[in-house]
Image (cartoon, rainbow, N blue to C red; front, side, top):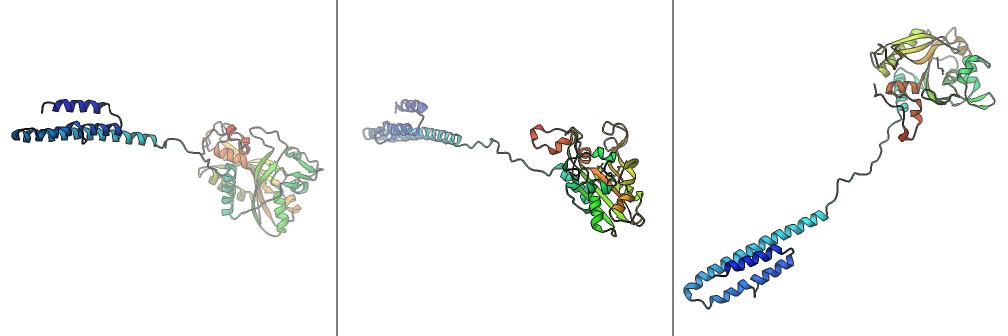
Length: 346
Ligand code: DAH
């Protein structure tokens, strides 16, 4: 069969340009179909002498197989190409980032207050509330700060009615309310976290609204050392076991003696750094023994009862603990303008 190579070469040439299954099928028909050029060769068998028939038949079979294999290989190639194109078109782009849902978290101030509450509750204290719109009587007078007393100047606040109803400038009025409600014959252990107000211009360390955590303990035979032990416990809980505390003499109208309570600086461990202004100590609250006048004003006999009180600035505690350098950060709701966070949690 002389033109075998010729047929295969022309088939190969056609296959090299075909790019779809329809054309491929046409090529198959052209060579192997009923009237195909290879099929046509079979009709020649009849014209051949007997001895050549066998050889020709064998060669024709070989040619058919080779042609079929070439076409099948091409089909496989084309089918693969089509499948890959289909897969590429239908691909889902999973690299596109999803919609971010911002996670909420408790306000850091609230978090700190809860920690303080839990510590005091574990020592048997109640957590109580008092009104933010307060009477002058509770905010000042019962606390031994009569009208016209210069101590009022430091706590100038917002007045609602004349000079009798105001936004409380401290949580200390809740001391008076709690003692009066207890009736003068029961021991008291309470803390009162809450909002307070002053006519201060807002800056990094002042806010016209801030939070205090008031504390009051009334019982028999209470001394300054009870206050020291209580303060020591809470300081260690909040600032770590190696925290050391000290008292400095101070003056408040509702306590006698009065103290400022300091903790050893947790940033430098008392060596001196910028946080503690090189003193090694940080002041965290005012405190003292409840003044006999206050006990008397609130129905407790100072000859029988004694007690201590303290007042923490809640934001100040949180600023120290979490390295926040601007009190306004607690009340900002626009996160794009957040200020005041530059130190990690201790
Ligand atoms: N109320 C005081 C203030 O706002 C803080 C304070 C000091 C509260 C001493 C107390 C205390 O209970 O005993 O400055």
